[in-house]
Amino acid sequence: MIELALFFSVLIGIYAIMALALNLQYGYAGLLNFGLVAFFAIGAYASALLSLSGVPVLIAMAIAAVIAAIVGALIAIPTMKLSVHYWAIVTISIAELIRVISTNEEWLTGGTFGLGDIPQPLAALVPLESYPLFFAGFTLVLVAACYLLSSALVHSPYGRVLKVIREDEDFGQSLGKDVASFKLRTMVVGAAMVGLAGALYAHFTTYITPQAFEPIVTFIIWAAVILGGKGNLLGSLLGATVIVLLYNSTRFIGDYVELSAVTLANIRLALIGLLIMLTVLLRPNGILPERKQVF
Amino acid sequence: MAASPIIDVSGLSISFRGVKALQDVSFALNSGEIVGLIGPNGSGKTTALNCLSGFLKPDAGVIRFKGEDITGQSPAEVANRGLMRTFQVTKLARRMTLIENLLLAAQKADDESLFATIFGRGTFARRQPRLLERARELLETVKLSHLENDYAGVLSGGQQRLLSIALVLIRDPDVILLDEPAAGVHPDLVVEFIAMVNRIREERGKSFLIIEHNMHFISSVCDNVVVLDAGTNLASGPPNVIHNDPRVLEVYLGTPQDA
Ligand SMILES: Nc1ncnc2c1ncn2[C@@H]1O[C@H](COP(=O)(O)OP(=O)(O)O)[C@@H](O)[C@H]1O
Ligand SMILES: [Mg+2]
Image 1: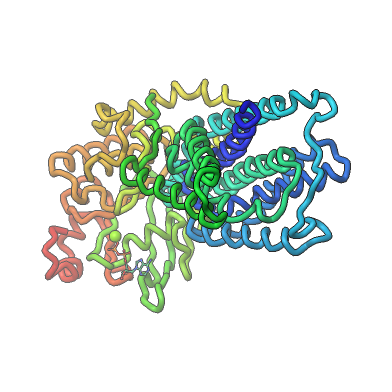
Image 2: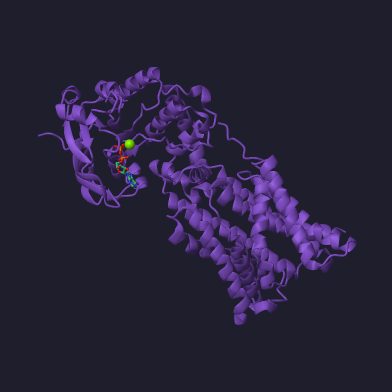
């Protein structure tokens, strides 16, 4: 039971980091990133490959986040002057491209068999029986760091420029804000966070295959942000918790009712879809709506 | 020798898919002067202002600001040089409070860098009280103090126009371009508006280029008026002369506005 709770807390933490990143991009800046899973995959594969080749895990994770950030920049630079709708299309395409690469470039990614025996952080220093607890604590530290970073960003002059991108780019420009460069920076910061979450995932499961990087991951992150409340960072933590628990607890329906795996997967998706529809109808700004900043 | 104008536009032309919106338009604005830009709807006034503020790149022509060629620079660059504008359809951050809008306008690029945001928060925090004070002064000027912590989206059209002027003023530009500041504003407020523009010019020596249909507004504040018709220069001169110019009266015939 403890094991299960620790397992879920790590999973929630991984999604919470990604929900914080999407909240920065979409909730505050209005940027439509429908390819989050691409950065998740890049972070996971990069950190897995680096650590498998002997780089210490913590350093591998940091490099993986930087690689995801660089890919984010490469995507943002040619598109940063375009409207956010182009971002939607470009990010979806990148996610698909990354998935195709992870499936087909066997020499690098192990193809559909994936990568196994991925080392875990500080495994030599922590006793085996307390390792799950250690990993949950490690995840918590990373979530807290990402939360503090996001909070520093949004409650600052930088955060006000993010909001003006969402509200009206031309207005921002008329006030002398170089809007495009803020889109770039926000893409980079978000990509680094999602990349870090991917790295965490790889070292948590110690085994990754392309199946872990389907578009459903992006869907779950969006669901978490919309449910929790866009423009509210605590909302992202709450949203990630609810959605991850709901999504994974429906696995256990199979223990009570005779259902095929495909039917079960569809039920889980339908439940989240229903929850999102209810949210949009009943609490369009999420469970924890954006709070007004009063001076 | 006369000082060179703070804004000097010459030979401005632009067309949209073959439609010539501006053809060889020229005018100038001297420092401390208020110039009115008038003309019937569709005559190219907003297009000219969009070119000046960098939102449109002219096909031909040169725009000089404080002696420098700024043609084709980005809107943000132009604004940071000290040439700022408002919009005919007011643009604001609607889901930010009035004070937040003003802080957004007041803060500088240095405050907004990622590095300053993460490692140098003290710098802006120390400046913030003074910026807040300035923001509140400006809200007082435009009579919106009681709404300082309301979202800008709840303001009436006239109030939004007033706020947009306060947003420009807090950055202390040299030249302010206003696109129909009095449109849809209550007549009592227009009177205050006129007083405000005159006061800003007197106290702070700002220059204005004002697009406006309200002829009372134009004659109360402008030193000079430039008239556009179908994208070309029609006339220019002091308001009382322009008001009686037969060519100007002719292009306005059939348009019931008092301009
Ligand atoms: N972005 C645009 N695309 C196409 N046509 C435009 C655009 N902006 C303005 N125009 C056209 O240019 C002409 C001048 O418009 P505008 O400058 O808005 O006039 P005014 O402000 O004097 O009423 C009009 O015929 C208008 O339809
Ligand atoms: Mg116009």
